Length: 149
Image 1 (tube, rainbow, N blue to C red):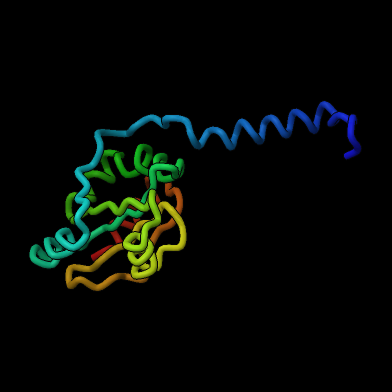
Image 2 (image 1 turned 90 degrees about the horizontal axis):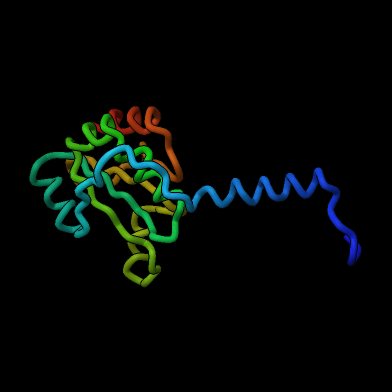
């Protein structure tokens, strides 16, 4: 577009609408329930899961990730999801700062984007399926959790 030319009104409205939609990711989405009691020591959580013969769920997230916040508030805290999560040992890995240790964990578990949910079976084996990356609505997430033995 040449200097000094303005966008047609209809195009300007589309640009403003798109900018507004993108900004929604930073809004404080309503919480479905109280925060979950995430463990933060990965090794201890995985040892606990093996000892108790329970599957583990590793949630990779970051403070700067608006989709991570939305997944937490809208889906993971939903009463039906929280109830299903009781059979898991749940651990959260904070990838806010990509230090070498965090980068090693992302590589070890094959995480290529956030948020990511990685499942570990009761024997301590990382499952390649099911796996989740990005935002998930409650129903598909509940089905995913139920598929983990």
